[in-house]
Each structure stands twice: as C-alpha cells, then as structure tokens.
Image (cartoon, rainbow, N blue to C red):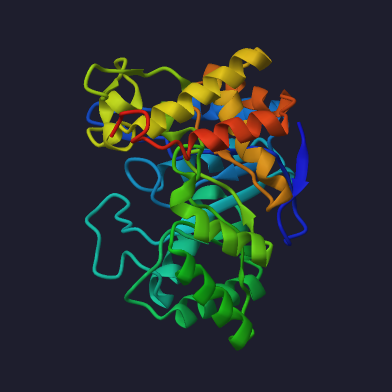
Length: 339
C-alpha cells in the first residue's frame, strides 16, 4: 500500500480510504452491507494496509449504525493505527423522530453530535471532523468557533469540509484566517472522471490553499465500473441489485454521450493495463497528486469489490492515458450527433 501526507495535516494515510456509507443502508428490505459484511470489509482494509476510515453520524438505518459497527470492530484493534473521519450536519433521529435542533451546524447541534459520534465509535477523539454540508441558517463564524473549541479540547484533530460551493469554501477559509480559528484542511467533494468539471472551481481553491481532497463517489455510483450498458434510447441498463436498479435518479446523470465517452476511454486504458475500469478510474484520480493530495474514498459493498478497488494502487499510469480520459470529458457532443 502507498501512503501520503494528508495535505498540511502531518498525518500519513493510505492512498485509498474506506468509505462506510453503505454500512446498514437500506433500500426497502435490502441492506447494502450488513454488520458481518461491514466487519469483514474493515478487517480486509486493515490487512491491505488501509488506515483511513471515513464515516458519518447519519450513515446507516437507523442513523449512527455505521459508527456503531466501526466502534464494535475497533474494540479488537489498536485505535492509534487508524485515521478516522466522521461528519455532522444532517438530521439525526437515532431511534426516534428528529427534533428542531437535530440538524445543521449550530453550536448546540455540533456539541450534541460530537458526543454521540465519539460514544458510538468508542474513541476519545476524531482525526477529522467534516461539516457534511454548508448551513445557510448558521453563520460560518459560529460553526468554525465551536469546531475550533473541539480541536483545542482534544476531541478533534483536524477539520474538514464536504460538499459546498467554491465561494463557500473560500469564505470559510477567509473567516478562519481573519478570526484566528482552526481552518478546514481536508475536503470531500464528489469527484470522478464523469463529473469532474462540476467542481472545477472548488478544486482550484483546494490546490491554491493546499487542502487535501478525498473524493466520494469516485466510481460515479458504479457507472465507471463498466457493469452498465447503454440502452437504445441512451439510458442506463442496470443489472438487478446494482445502484442504478435501486435508485430511480441514477440514470439521470449518465444518459449523456459525454458520460459514455468517458467510460469508453476508461475501458480502453483498462484493456491496455490488463486492469478493470474501476481500477483505472481510481488511479486517474490519484494522478492528481501533483495538484493536490488526492485520496479517493472507496465504498465497496462486498469484499471482492474491495479487493478489486485496492488493485488500483498497483497500476502504472502514464500521462498519455490520463490525458485520453481527460479529453473524453470535453468531447463535443454535437459533433458526434449525441445530445
């Protein structure tokens, strides 16, 4: 396993992080990853040298399930081996109905949620604490102030920001600088070869401010694994049990010619490297290391998927192959006759 320094934090992490948003996640009666599978994935990740575990208080059904299962597993392992990240923002109802202060980034909500997260994980501190989204209702200074307190209290080591606009990230960094507060050092936007351009401005801020980038959905919800086929009308034909078959909105993102062009380029490189499209897609993201520290978060559902994904760290990737995938993202769809 390769390791990198995570931006300016001084922490060393594996080139891939283990995402746990599938742990306990339900689609009706279907559980994407049950407790036994979750513990198996955690053990497999440790065996393969992954020391970076990503979770959130709202992962699982009910909320907190993922953190609880990680905490159970950690009781048989050395906490200090791992870099653990969690998040706060979304409504948290635990086993009941959410109350009026059970969401957002107010001092009250963050204070309540950090205690629950630490208890479920069975740890005294988090290595990274992300704000899961931007809170329009709470001044960013209030949010940063309470997060700064958590750092000085030793409950959190570093701060992170997940999905938000580039201007919001810049505003938060400016506020930290002006107010003398701990700033965000790690970010977690949705980044993959298909949707890279949508966060281009955000990534420019990260590069300029030397923030680490830990992309979620690096395989575009499974689209970049190559397991989907294009229907006669350009729609996604999904095998039973896949994300697209479980989520009605999945195909909306991948019915354009551009998405299929990117997948075609990924598959071409995969053939050359005797690799899988998933491995190539992950390695393509890692190639951004020259611009910013990039550690994709993989959310494998099974151990076999996990082993495939980890194989991305073994690939030798050329600039020409990177460029080929990059150029497929900018294909002129009018010239190809597709809309």
